[in-house]
Length: 163
Image 1 (cartoon, rainbow, N blue to C red):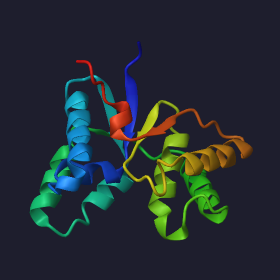
Image 2: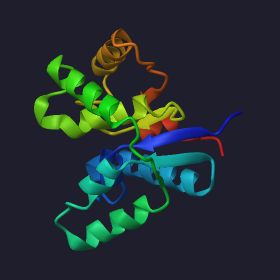
Image 3: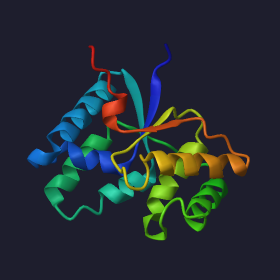
């Protein structure tokens, strides 16, 4: 079976170091996901947008840890910038993603124009990993003639449990 290529959206990183007991299972799944990427079970990718979002973290110690964590992933070059911009504007203008969440629209657009990505991984269940949002994004994407050839999942849905 082909190894899956995962695009890791910014929200996933925050749970790696989250010590809030309410987020124990999210943290556990996030750590396991990164461990499985390190072991070569998946290939992990991010974009410059993810790096930019991580580097605005005000806690300098946490910022350093997040940057180190990001180093195990490959940065996707942003090609087809006009398509990324067009799609992200489409998602916002047609109400799939709120205007104040432009980076969320950009994450989805980047994955659309990178067909080698199998799954966009996110913990953002409000604006990305949501059945209604996913259906809307797929519909809008395909209406414009683009292929929506990837899944959108949480780390819990992606990690391999029986190893």
